Length: 217
Ligand SMILES: C[S@@+](CC[C@H](N)C(=O)[O-])C[C@H]1O[C@@H](n2cnc3c(N)ncnc32)[C@H](O)[C@@H]1O
Image (cartoon, rainbow, N blue to C red; front, side, top):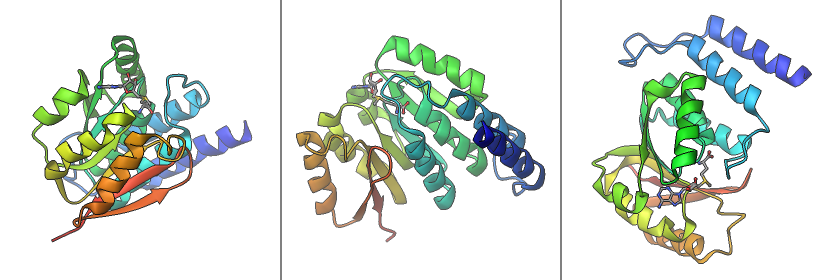
């Protein structure tokens, strides 16, 4: 409770004093929206039941996007939208947009409702589709990819998206610690480490994430 009050107070203070550079985005980027999203995440903490990322991982994704000023994001595996809301919270500040893909209709529809409630619908292009097919069709470029769907397909997602990843951009894969024994995760990590233009590190907070970033030329 005290933690919740502190969090709300923190966002109230930052929403009052932090301002964005003018002309940073085509959408109205407001710290009011940042506070609204933070409030939504805070109010829904502990309620996510559909294989959603833990809050620590959501925060890591959020901070990575802001630190690198990423604006062109893709997520594979929306589920009910927890990670997408963390990502869009960061994109609200960088002036970016997210495409997110989900194959299951119920989870997709719940995500859409969550995006509306959190106030982030205008930042997200949510697709009900099979990512195996759609990922190949998307044009890119992307500077941030979050892979959180079927682990056995992780390497194929990475292979399809590396040519569409901008220099300096990062491909983040979820569950590399919890699913560390899965053949899909292991082969994706081997593949990532064999790419001379990629630098891969592991983040072991939460469920474990690999972060593979394309070197600048
Ligand atoms: C681990 S959950 C994603 C959790 C989500 N990132 C979050 O934190 O809220 C994985 C999701 O990927 C979806 N998925 C699995 N295979 C897929 C595919 N081929 N195309 C699109 N979505 C897929 C599943 O239906 C499931 O909802």
